[in-house]
Image (tube, rainbow, N blue to C red; front, side):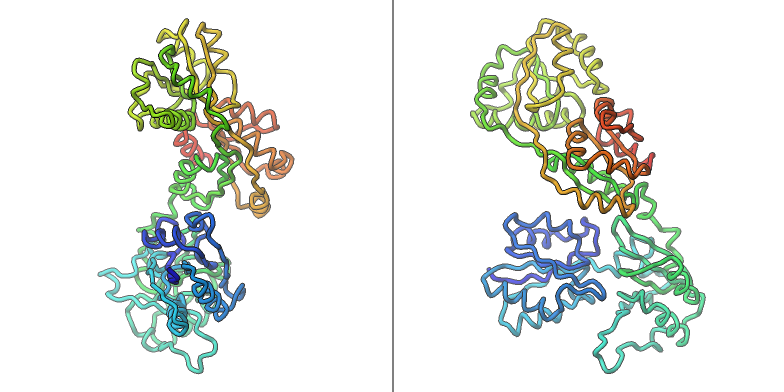
Length: 501
């Protein structure tokens, strides 16, 4: 259907995108987005969708509004469905009404998907409720940047000045001296609390509270710039008491996640919930083997196996994929003892109805082998489904302990062809405070893509790794980890980052 969807993408926090908006991004032929719509939403788009950036940054419009309208209409008339992402809500200072009128004029079908507007969300993330029974019973949304072609201002400063309403100004930070001056001239007391919230709801959010008399000077001193929301009224006095978002332990800290894209979400989500600005830089890809004949033979011969040892979540997934491929399921493991190398792998097994017989407290080869020796591994037949290329420490130690070990490759990891320019640029601008490594392969591939000497230029950037094996690999490249958890898990790594940054 050649429909244009005017979608409110919310104020920036990806979690504030509506379900309806996500559904449309996932299905539309074309996605048109601007400066204020979080680029992270583009990951929901179809792989074959056409992605178009139209700018709309203050003073730097990649495309003027009339050309944006023509572009959207043109795509719709080609028979394509268009998701037009607009920061906040399309009908709250988003020029969505103008675009909708153009759709009507052109005879193009359109729908509006409301979004969370920054005028409510940004103050909320700064600890400011825009209404509160002790302070005000109304709120007024006002543009701080009127259409310069208008002959007469639409602002009634006398009403704003005398009103007790919370005033929320959009796009007005450049005009802050004029706004504050007009409010005081028209009756607002000079000591009225005023708040500014920049990049509200995002990991780089900043806020400040001042008074109507001092806010312009203080904002200039603290270099507050667009995009910022201005909030005027008694409710701003609650900011310190009700602040919650800016208390997150990693707020504003740039952290690079080097895990494979298929696994990066777990760590990235934990870090984002802690307030971090996450840079996903997958250094490896997890891919199926070209030929699974040996895996199928091994599965059909499980009757001769005593222990099945899984060393990763990927090992579990690809092993089960082949079980299903040959028409078998979890019942095939009946009678086998199963070990998982860590809690995440154990959880993956439990999701398939298998509770591991052994999970070591720490993933170091000595502890794994010791635990399995206690369970009678010597003389037993052991099958280890794992990556095609991996460290040999565990199978070698098990063989030394008297087990009959067979390594069974069920997937392979490959170097991701990833452009490091975004990471290098962020390093140069001081936006990155930590780089995380969760395996030896992420270390090796990272330094294949980005030379060790490049990273050594930034000694203030902390290196975080998940365990001693990864730490030894880092040492080969001339780095000693600054952050290493005692608990070799993703939650443990995230917690250590929270304490170490």
